[in-house]
Image 1 (tube, rainbow, N blue to C red):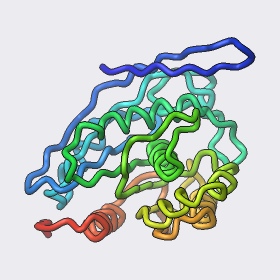
Image 2 (spheres, rainbow, N blue to C red; image 1 turned 90 degrees about the horizontal axis):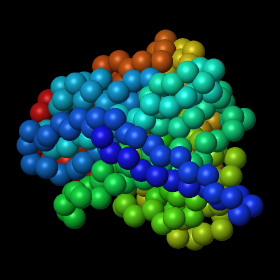
Image 3 (tube, helix red, strand yellow; image 1 turned 180 degrees about the vertical axis):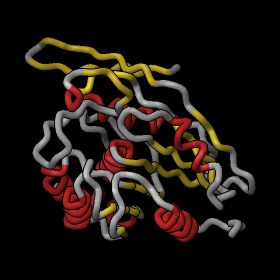
Length: 257
């Protein structure tokens, strides 16, 4: 188990929550190690669920790190505890944002990537709430800091989000507009977003609006793929898209077909 504490101060009073992250599963590269990607599961899931799938992909040059989110009360489920990267009451653009939880999870991801060799390309991806956390990590990267103002330390080279949404979408454009460096980073960061039109958990329109918000904020290297009839799950057509996109975006060699 690993843990990270974060605190939030208001009016001279400090509240502190400690987040206990679950087991991390690692899929070692079968070929030359060229990239490391942290892959984040969805709400109520665990890292092992995705590590088993990722191990089957024809991407022998990627090391996958699949952490498990903390178990915490989730407002969406009436306070019932389950694994979650951050608290959420509703999945919509108008939902209140658990910035403390997002920062803690983004920092956990950055910490997992911080010990990788200097010549290895780094990325973050995920499904549903994991995709939301990966997109939040992308905004931290381009802005150079977490939501709490602490510096973000990792140079990300690829972001993948399946069936997800963008947290903090309302404030992103304004924050981006105040920094030329953020705009430069955003323009060069490759992002792949995939969403099923039949998704009844994270509505397709929310995924589409998230892609539009990112594009408007300056993320020029963004690909948005849609799938007719796809619900809130993944299919081989989608994972093939991810494999092809990662191979091209990261310049990977020696992939098996």
